[in-house]
Length: 415
Ligand SMILES: [Zn+2]
Image (cartoon, rainbow, N blue to C red; front, side, top):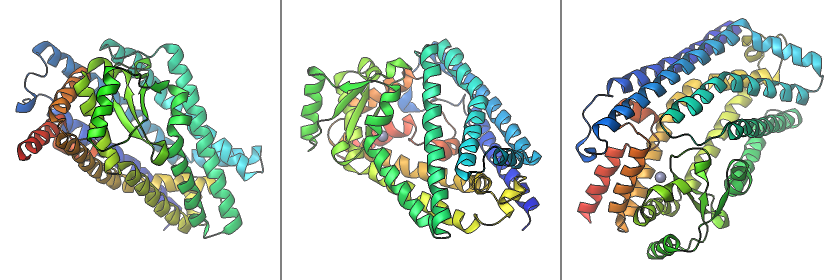
C-alpha cells in the first residue's frame, strides 16, 4: 500500500460520508408530504402543519449547505497536503512534541469552529428565532462558544499528550494503558458531568417542595426507587424546547428536568416522562453506554497501535517526516467508514432501550401521561411526523413519535 493510495482512500471516505448523509436527507425530504400516521392525527392544525413543513425545509437547506462546505474544505485540505505543511510549520515553532500536539489541536479546533460558526449562528438567531424557539442572547451564544472551545481544546490536547507520553515510554503496548486512562476519564466524567460540565453552561437546582415534588416522590416510591437527586435545569436560557435526562451512576445518579418541561406539561405528564427516565436507570442504560464506549475506544487504540509507527499515514497527509499527530489525524479520518456502520448500530441499540424505558413507564401506569406528554413536546418542537424509515434507521436515537405511541398502546393492551 502506498501513501498515495491511503490519500485516495481518505478522500474517498469523506466523499462517501457526504454521499450517504446526502442520500438519507434527500430520502427524508421525499417523505415530508406523506400522510400523517393515524395515532398522530390532529397533532397539528393546518396552519401549524404548514409552519412545521417550512421549519423543516429551512433546517434541511442549511444542513445541506453546511455538509457541502465542510466536505469541500476537508477534501481540499487533504488533497493539498496542508496537514503536512502545518506539521512542518509547528515543528519549526517548537521542538517539543507536546507543544506540536497542542498547536495542532488548537488549529483543528479553531478551524472547525470557524467553519461551523456561520451555520450555528444562522440556525440560532435566524431559524430558531423566526419559529419562536430561541432564548439564547448574543452574550450567552458567544460565551458558550468560548467555554465549549476551551473545554474541548483542553480535553483533546490533554488526552493526546497523555497517549503520546505512554507511546513514548512504553512503545507498542501503549494502547492498553491508554485505554486504561480513557476508562478513568469516561468514569470520572460520567460521575461528575453534572458537577463539572453542566454548570459551565446552565444553572441547576434541586426541585422545590410542592405539588410536583410530592407527586414525583410518590411515583418514585411506587416504582421501588429511592431517588433523592431530582434537579431542574434552566433550559429556558437557550431554547423553549423541553427535555429531561438521567445522568451519572452510583451515588452521583440524578434525574434532570428542564424548566421548560415543567412549564409545558401537566404534573401527570412530567411524572410520566420522569418514570421513563427511571426506566433507563432500572435497566442500567448509562452503564451499558459507558461500557460500549470503553470497548470502542479500546479497539480503536489497539488498531492505531498497529499503524502508528508506519510512515505511510503521515506521508498520505503530505508529511515529510514521521509524526505522531499526523498519524492520529489520518487514523481518525480512516475511521469514517467504521463510524458509518457503528452509528446506525448504536442507534438501533439506543431505540431498543427507549422502547424498554417506555414499557417500564407504561407498566407503572404512566402510559397515558407519556403519550400526551410526548405529543405536546413534539408539537411544540415542530417535530417531523413522517420521517423516512431509512433515515430513522440510520440516525434516530429514539423511535419516531408514532412508533412510540403505537408501542405504548400495544403495551397497555397486553397489561
Ligand atoms: Zn429515553
